[in-house]
Image 1 (tube, rainbow, N blue to C red):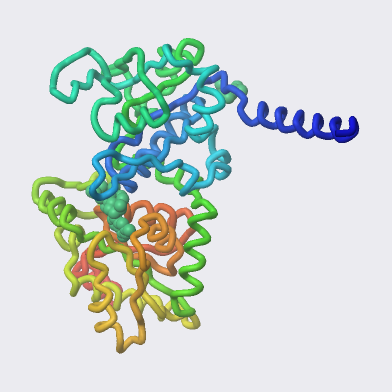
Image 2: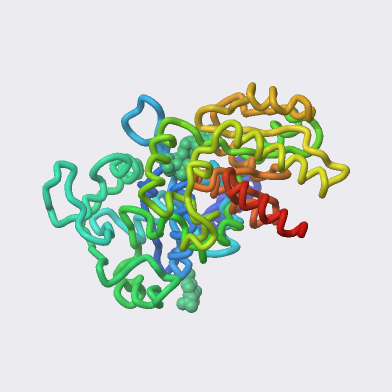
Length: 398
Ligand SMILES: Nc1nc2c(ncn2[C@@H]2O[C@H](COP(=O)(O)OP(=O)(O)OP(=O)(O)O)[C@@H](O)[C@H]2O)c(=O)[nH]1
Ligand SMILES: *[C@@H]1O[C@H](CO)[C@@H](O)[C@H](O)[C@H]1NC(C)=O
């Protein structure tokens, strides 16, 4: 090789190294890591917004954890990189973040070397067999083990931060107390056994959803589906949560005032209504009635953009035939994704001209938040109450 070519190689190599070093600067203010160990996607997304708010309040970098997923017939969870579903740059507009894969590969040896890894939990977590060991036992159970072990992380010590400290940095100036008790010099990484966040997401953190933007991969799939498979024209997206686990969960509504995400329609202190079976598990008749009503309402306000189709997302029964049968006269057809893909389902629901969700479901809540941040319209099955609505309408007429 000539020396000129060599020199060019040297230049390229050097630039690459510089870029690399710049990309992975250490945050002297420290990091927050956690395992999204509770629930499935909707639950984890609620927790994520809280964790984002928490790390922002402490002025630490949030280590973006992979999403924890469960596959039928597999006993261990699998971890999907955060960036498979979401963009990093839009989150950076709000606060400091780094994907966990990048942190572990490029920074952990310097910032958080093996032998000095402390797990944080509110109070002791018993071992799987129920015995006590004065530890967070951060890797005990599923998905706890798979999550941390997937990165080769072992914990050397536990730190119980309760009962003096809580995650609630929105009230009571908790952020200052955290930083006082756990300086970034001594505690570069606060690694929590679960999300440093509340479920459901606190009202004050709902707006953070605007920084959560779907990855290009998901956006591409959404575009393909809408362009190639849906008829031209406006469409309503609906979420039908009706699997066996949900039917069982709805059994509990008689014992509680709120269930899962229900605060999104009932208000956090039930100031906007109370739970009912119509809200948790609407009947087929209620579903079709609500759709018809929305179609008519939409027609009045969007004269040149009538509803042409319904996009159905569901964990179980999409009711496609039933919907087609009952919407034939309105010349509206129902569609679904050919495959089971929760994230593409969510992203399509986010794009619909109107959305009808399940108020109790945190899966629906994801869509509602995304749509709110864009000023798109949404409603819920069974809410507001049909009778109340009719009375309200009569009232207005008088
Ligand atoms: N593909 C697809 N999957 C869904 C749909 N609704 C629910 N699921 C699946 O069921 C899971 C429900 O759990 P979450 O996402 O936590 O939401 P949730 O409705 O509040 O339900 P629970 O947490 O189980 O009480 C989702 O993560 C999906 O895996 C849907 O419309 N489409
Ligand atoms: C927040 O952390 C950054 C380093 O990531 C630092 O430059 C900045 O001064 C900190 N802000 C405050 C208010 O402490």
